[in-house]
Image (cartoon, rainbow over all chains, first blue to last red):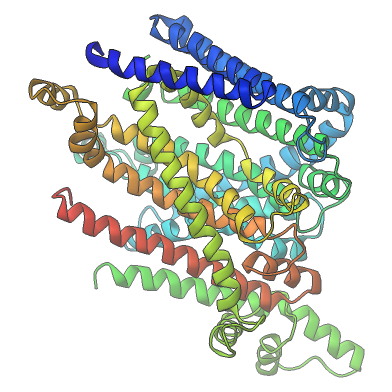
Length: 304
Length: 288
């Protein structure tokens, strides 16, 4: 970074020019630009530092800056709340309609997504173990599973709504199909992860098929399995929300989003999206934590 | 043959299961009809025929779906509103436009992240975290808001597709651009290579396998985005609209045909990317 000074000076020039142009064109634009570039400069300074503090301070500051800018833009330019509500309005909505949001989360997140995720993942692991003894079936199932995993499976939502009714069962069914194939593919790959030496070792101990599976191959497959499970957490919430667009009882995150569009209650939609974001990251984080506990021996977990 | 036979077996098993399920699930309707007409329920042979010739079956038999698909693709002019080619193209064009925008923006941001420490530390954690968020939930609101601002048709759907394909490309490309090890970077430093030369001669070529892997994920996500983006405008055009109108009117065969059309589009996209990947990697000498 020693010969970057020329680049730095050009950058500074561009920044100052943009600021001046912004202030002349519209003082409001100038304010927004100043805050953004100021925060960026602070961030760049912190980022040069070492240690664990910048690791979380910089992204946090970036997120706060975005929120502040969002609020400022909405306030200064008087953006209509039916186009983009301010973060403060969304926060007020979240605080004001806690019970509704909680009921929606229970309906979509716990009943729809979580049930479907559990059933789908269990079925996929069972299927992977079932085809484990037949390399022929594995060779057939892997490409088909990979192919199906790339398909837009949310499209089966209308069919599932017809079969299982409007309530959470149809959402769980969509989620089951969505999570099944990624988990299956990863689990089948994981069951192959042991090498011949380890299997021979089990054979010299006269271990049965099930003992080998339980003591050696299942633990060895766990890193692969968790990879699939983590992909599935994201898919599960998406599946449950989108399936509600095709028909739902009068509760649920997808229903609330769809209904609020009709009323142009955008703050409610953003509140639901915020809940979905928190729920999605929390679910993913939980699975990642379990992974850390269970596969502590794996090189990818041992480095920290 | 060693690779095709197992796949064919699995596919054949799925088709057989499907036919069995179609008979089992459509049976109730046939029995109900017979009971209402006051006649004896039909014998097994007739029963099987009756379960596969219904207009609105609970589960259409595979050949019914294929027939509907064929009717939608070849049965009429491709400009017709009943043509699946017409609807498929509407969805595909939004997908492709969004995918192109999302990929270009994703690569650009990844290059920025790799070269700027502040950008790396502030943007990358959010990009990774955003992958665990069901972003798709924003799609209907976005479409309606754009609609109220007078922007309709292709562009809003393309933006959603771009947004969905953007993050996988960013995360994959950052990994790819950082794939060269310290030895290779040191070698370029001994050649006194600048940032642009390192990027063009080492980082970009090294990132190609990562790029194609994330392109496949991104293309699938972009298609889902375009389909979901077609839902809130009220079933006007596109494969998502076919799904929604089929679900309104109980036209199960139409839903399945639209679903298969979407699957074919997705498979086509992934196959094209896979082909480009094979050719590119072979020409670069990176093929395994």
